[in-house]
Image (cartoon, rainbow over all chains, first blue to last red; front, side, top):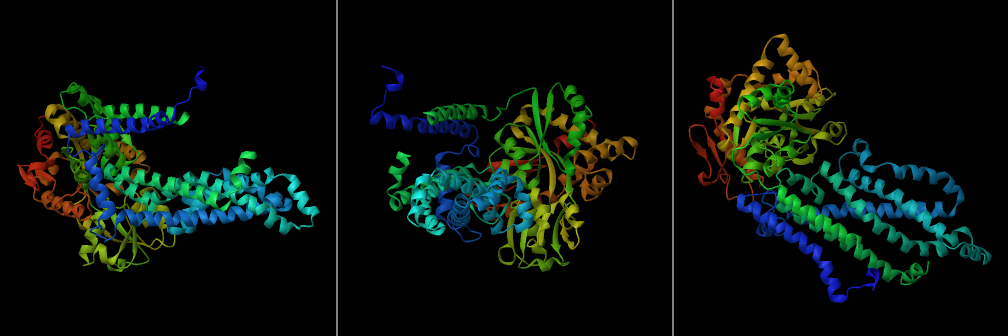
Length: 273
Length: 357
């Protein structure tokens, strides 16, 4: 039997999937034990109890200086920035993508510009953003929008191009005007694809958020990581990284569920295309 | 499939990394590494390396010393704490909160200088410190700037908790931040202070010359490494004071040294000498000895430990500001005598003063 046809059964599939995670954990535990034997106060690879302490301190105990529970404060601040940034990018992407995708005049005006703007590395213009919109919330949200919006627009324009031409012709023969075609034919088909696009852009959005928070902030997940980095507090940093990963995973899952609930027909359409 | 292979590689990498990053086992050895970062009081290290002074003293003791520059100050301390370097340039506060609180027993081989105006509180359009009340203050949180702000507020009976709010801002973006309308108060260090004060409306309302001797710039080394290799500490002191004599001299060679250091720190002779004016350099080992043997360092470290404890920076669940023990010359200690992790010593500077290197 050829190697490409050998398939693990369900149990061994799950075992294999768990293997790399286990290996990382074991490697960590070994390294940590060796370093802790040498120096019980080692900060680089803290032991599991140090993590438990840190999680308890960050997530369940009010900070003695401000009275806030830091993890929730940071999570709230970061998620609010992320939500506003992605919402603005999604709304803008939908509006511009839809009009540029459908109307040749708009496309001629905007398409080359959006293409060029999407090539600008957002982090490179960060210092300019700070000077233009200040150091407050606006600059963090703007960075997410600047980073994500051009990608969403370009993606939606391509997705509109992918729609079967016949549909638009058929709608026109049935007497639909441009507006009706946009709202009744294209929009419903584009919305689930917008969700796909947002899912793919979640990673970059987090990246921009954390970069912006690292530079100037009073709260946020990225802010906390870069702040305690000054103290090599791996016992705080690693749980924060795990938490961000989990949040990102949950957001992705949420969008997938939303897509399935709101557009049940889409899965089949995508498989067919 | 691809993911799994990647994770496999990652695991291998992690295993390798965790093995490689084992703490440097203290034992007699020949090769030593010093990490330094750009700051007026630490520029001599680069100059000494460039001029062969490092090699000269290392050869004398039959060892090798590698001098490595870091662009990121915090990263250099983290690398030292992780065991990748034997010595690092650091302030008294960061020496206590990063390596010492992290259990890495650290000895201050050289007390190089203290900030005497290099760190400052600057307000936009206001010229009294008390006007800071109610403002947002941009600074590198938990740095010496943060400490300076706390001490400044104390002097006008204000507190950080009630009267101001701190916005953590990267030092790399401090000057750009100052030029935006919503930033009205900053605390930072030179050369950023000079650059910000050159803009219209910037007023210095407090600086480190009002708390002299509290922000101390050190060259520290791992205590265990020093214990097994006293030659390393002696070589460091030898290099340092030879360079000090050179850079403080009113001779063409002295001017050349200061010019080179100014250039290396992104300014020129005039700019560098202006920064030196705001720095109380201990050019002679005897000056440094007088300072480190006096009562001042102990009183300062007590304040610093209090500040760090208030901000939760003395390690997990530190019960009090005395969680980490600090030793001073003559066997005086502050704090937990069972967990002494930061030591001010006069051994090496005294050897330099007595010409016994």
